[in-house]
Image 1 (spheres, rainbow, N blue to C red):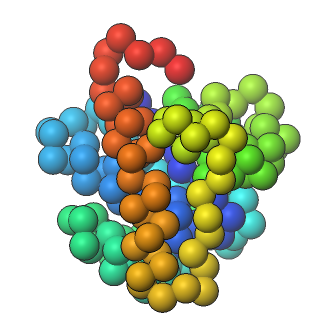
Image 2: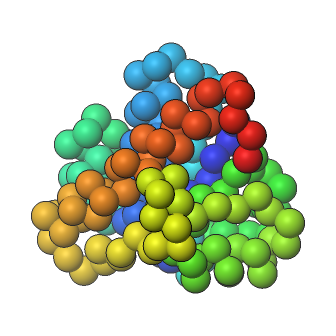
Image 3: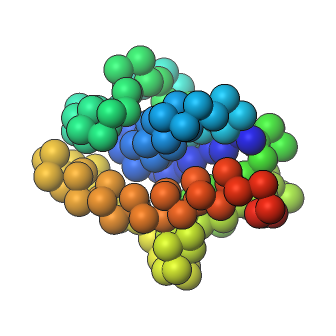
Length: 152
């Protein structure tokens, strides 16, 4: 299963989600679950923010070799599920790649139509708070995706 996390600049939220998700899969020996990330408004090849790297390190993730990717139309069919951080991202994804299987991250934590706040410009503590806010939804999504009976 190929999962794509999408945010705005692909330097904060989606890279942390990607790193966490891949850390969970590696921990469980799951080679069939692979997460990537992209940004609606980014340039290809940029690093994750220092704060995102620090938070990823804290949970055993690794963003040291991370490079940003701009969301493109073809990604709509390349990924089994695309996870948007905000309602605005979801709308943009649907406009760029009609028919893509896209869901909001926080829906997986029972927070329907809620947005993950953008920590851009905050210190490490701000990034850690945003990651902690995302974590229950990421854990629920991972559990749902690794349960063979779940359909999206």
